Image 1: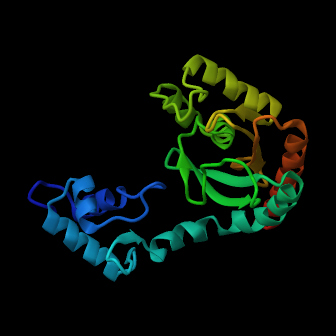
Image 2 (image 1 turned 90 degrees about the vertical axis):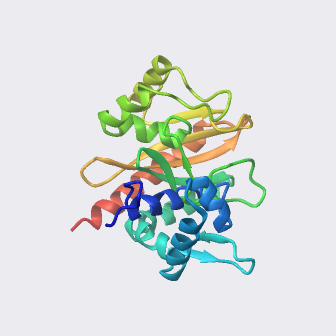
Length: 249
């Protein structure tokens, strides 16, 4: 792939353009993209136009730009089997909990939420489908970090540990104890880790051979009891794991 005069590849500049989008910044102008990606205006406009032409970005009626469906398709295909196995059990959890039910995986060292069911009158929850959080900053992330590769765990523990809320665990010694408890108990209860008014409860989802491939969680009001939700989640996670095992080639 050809380099720019600065020595950066075209792929590198495309990645910088795509990285200007996040869960709070879903629509931008080409000029804003160029400024945030630290690219010359003409370069940014040319890359944006090329990405729009191939469907990786889309323009709205005001010529602002958002991520295109063609960019999502590979990720959605990759998580399709997991989501298909999980949805019936997530619906059962949601029928009992009537708040927020979420499914998350690890992607590039972050917690990526691939599915969410919510009640119209449910409480606060900043996560959304395709939203990301640092791995130590949610009940789902703590489950995935506890059961994930040691290399990832040690890298996260080495910090820095970002505080998403005042109650996010940012002390590596305390975080190591939390992760050990998650492995021992098979559940994480995380009050206020993301938002002060909520408690996250999460359990691991395993594939047929026992490897943890996802976290199933609910977000409850801070005052709600967590024991019943944990039991419902454990039952649902066992059902998802059995379904995944039955469909292994």
